[in-house]
Length: 436
Image (cartoon, rainbow, N blue to C red):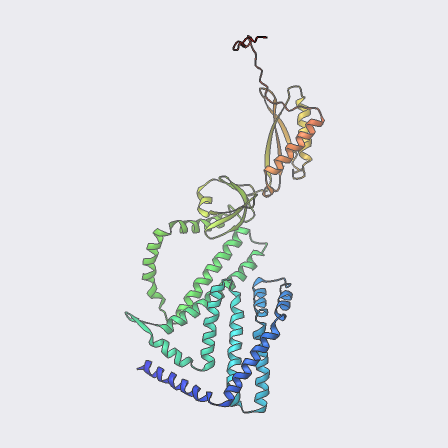
């Protein structure tokens, strides 16, 4: 019966609007609206590009810049709203208010569209931003047109009984809107808190990441609970359902949960942190970011490896900067037996010190390690403070400096020789006799 009453009210509203269309002032208002829209479109050409170019010079928060750019790209709608407001003010001062109803509604709908389309641009996902913008504008249009009660009653009639619970389209719509709004607000607050925590010098990098993630997860869970409670959903009824789902997901998401727990353990024990230089298997690089499921590691060749957190718990990890950034490197080399080993050791230390990245406070050392088959074997040991800048390159610079130093002092670097002793002359096939 309620559905029939709603249809009757809608039919009466349509009949009233059709009667109003017969009024000449209705056509006048439509013409004014069309002319103003065309004028706004023409006036915005060229102005939009100049304003957007100036807006992009702003240095600051990306979210604010995104909103400003979105506002600049709707210059035609801004001009349209301004022209509507001016014309509406003039008409209300010179004629009856009933002759400006259509212009007033157009102004309100245009303002609502402009506001929702610009604010929704804060969301980075374009599809999600457009969807939320259209939903928000539709709700605003229903309120502006004064049919919100009828629309709510109509949606409430579209219900599906589930036991003792009555699930209507109105409840689902409210839940979707509130859930989207509260979760979005929770994410914004969480990101703001995370930015503030990351700037704190009193906390270690691992604690900063852990606090940021815990606050974000907690705010999102709280926002979901508040949204569902606001529309009348009994959260206690979800305990059994969530328990059953949890058992099923526990078997299917073992690796995901394992990586998530491993990430929390990594943050708590502070074994690695952003900026550390690590070696895991064949991967050497520095940690850019710690995520809930993986660790982002950037290598010297610019590749970014997303390594699961579980690997940092179960495998052997070399953290070059865990307790101290100082790293010792060894460079083995050999010289001829004719060289003085004492002089070679001094020259090798001098060559290592000449390289800029070698730490001069901890003096390099050079030791004779053995008498090889064709050379005196040495090892040159030196320290560096910046392993994240690479190891192979600094070894290469030290070897080049060592080569130049040894060459300047006439010290040879031997290489293996092979002697072949022929005990009897080689025999070969007889040459054929040649005639004259």
